[in-house]
Length: 200
Image (tube, rainbow, N blue to C red; front, side):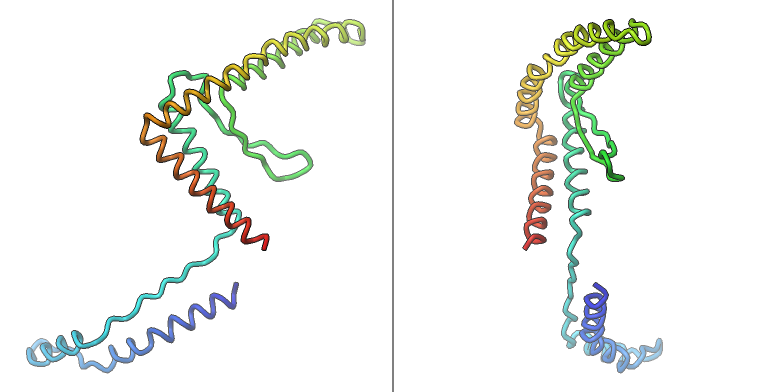
C-alpha cells in the first residue's frame, strides 16, 4: 500500500512538473504594462491544458459491507415510514456473537419481537409460580409454557406473509422505497463482486 501511494505521488509530480516549470518561466504581470498582460494571456491560451489524473484506491471489504448494511437499513427506514401497520416496522440491533467480540447486526419486524417476548414472558411466569427445588412443578410449568409459547410464535409465519405482500405493494407504489431498494442492490452487488475478486 505504501509503495502504491509513493508511486501515485511520484506520477502526479512527474506529470505536473512541466506545468509548474512553465508557470514559473512566465514573467509577472505589472499594473503599468498592459502589453505584457496581453502577451501573457495569449501565451496562456496557447498552452495545452494539463491532463487530469484520477486515482481510485481499492475499497476494503469491511467498508463495502458497511455501505451495504447502511443501504439495507435505509430501505427499512423508508419502509417503516410508509407501511400501514406498525407491527411491520423493522428495527435493527447489534448483538455480540457467541465466543467473539464481533457483533451481528439483525433486523426484525415488530410482530416477531413481540411474539418472542410474549413467549419468553409466559415461560418465566409459569416457572416463577413454582417453589424452589420443586422439580415436578418446574417440569409441568415448562410443558405448559412450551405450548403457550408455540401459540404466541405461531403468528409469525402468517405475519411474514402479510409483511411480504405489504413490502411488494409499497415497492411498486412508492418511488422512494424503490430507489432505496435499487441502491441497496447496487451496494450488495459491489460487495459480492469484491468478495469474489478477493477470493481469486
